[in-house]
Image (cartoon, rainbow, N blue to C red; front, side, top):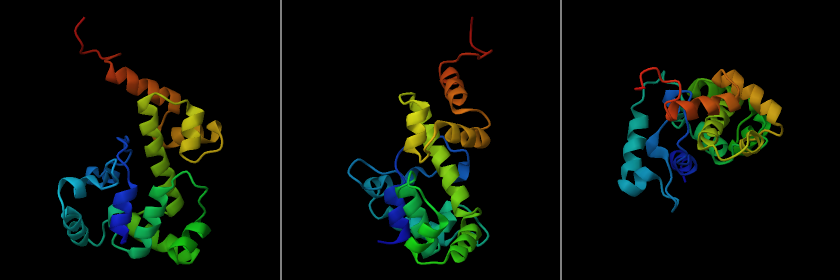
Length: 186
């Protein structure tokens, strides 16, 4: 299976709140049957996406552009498939068949950031989805996205989102229910 198909199968329909708008791709969501939504709704459309990727400007840097490189595509697929894994640059490089330095250089060239930074942001996107659902504790969410401690997770989340996860969750819930909306009728 090629890198695009791997990533399309591993990026799940999560409804994640994306901190980076360029990271969102509704066509990459997976159905309960394991088919990509784009493939299930529009047979053959994975080829359309593949052709689209081939037309991206050479200087574009994001995860979609990373799919142009077979090594980086496999690295992205691995990170998306198992984001909670205790990843190291060494393990990821070994898994895709590159040296650490070659992976770091190529990943940054295509995606625009180093692999571990990308992973951290992906984990925070997944965490945001869990927070919006409101069903799990911060500690459980921390574990689900690869953090052994709630404190470490909270520090990283605050650095990325600008606010601690519990406050971020409350702000989203308040916004959804119109709390604090000065434009709502009295």
